[in-house]
Length: 453
Image (cartoon, rainbow, N blue to C red; front, side, top):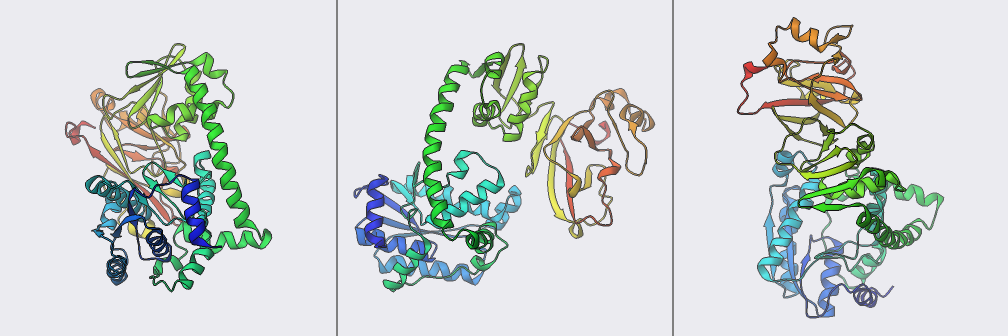
């Protein structure tokens, strides 16, 4: 493959940018971004270099920054560098290092575009990256937008190497005698992408020798399928949705007549912050009495007679709150729940006070439901072999009427996991074989006194 010619043809074919556009090129120092800088320079594009130092690999991070500064100077390009405390950012938000790095770099790239009047962010993602992304999204569980992979152009991000196999990029780098640095973490299978790259795809390739070419062809098909899919969904939404100020009204009868009801529910609710699991739960809402609702972080969808009504939340609280897997903070009327998964050995003592629940993560199935207790609720109090109704449990614990009104429970599959601030269910307790713990901590709202519950 003549990579340089193919690169120029791809830019024109996908209408990525023009010769007059000023570009911000993300350069890590690895082979892909180094090749991209060389291609852009040979083609005469106006590029500035951006490098993110995430401080995740000690001396390697320093080495990469020095290398990129020298590389940019050798091409006569302006270079901007930003340092990030990635580990702290990830810990504070209870997200993975990879997600933290992605959020930090793209937020910074956008600021640089605005400050310097540049047109596009240019990244070195190539064909094999895109295949890995498609497979990870497929196994993780995603819609059509996930399995069509990355797009050559999405808003202000362009990927002019998305057509190119990794081998072609390496051949170009070797032929041009280009220097680059290797990220030692790329050799580790601890990262999901590396596991797919080193383990999954090679094994599939043993059965299907042309797997990469076939998957790349599928990416093109999925991209076109998404266009048709979006046209069909948008047409149906136009017939279903009625807008009234900041509210969206959907007639239940018409919605029930829709083909692919689950997909339509997600496409309607997704833009308002509802997860796929919440959208699926709305199937039951269609048949429920008036007054029932489900809330996302920003909106709620309410069943009102023969209508579903989507409205913005005036506050961050709701009376029935779905807690999705991966959630780290859940706000409710009594304060906030903080959720954290951790290895058993990191937990420390089992008695961490009434506002902390330690449950065996292996028995927990998301989504959980956080809600006020109701008459008829029962659970198996920790240390007891028999079930007990919450009403009796409260009497035994001498709770007043006012105190009982403030009690919330965490529920899973209609089974109570924790009576918040009081006791967990015995079926969820830590056992000798427990390897991973879900720690749930109740942080009180400033207006709630400890003695109130």
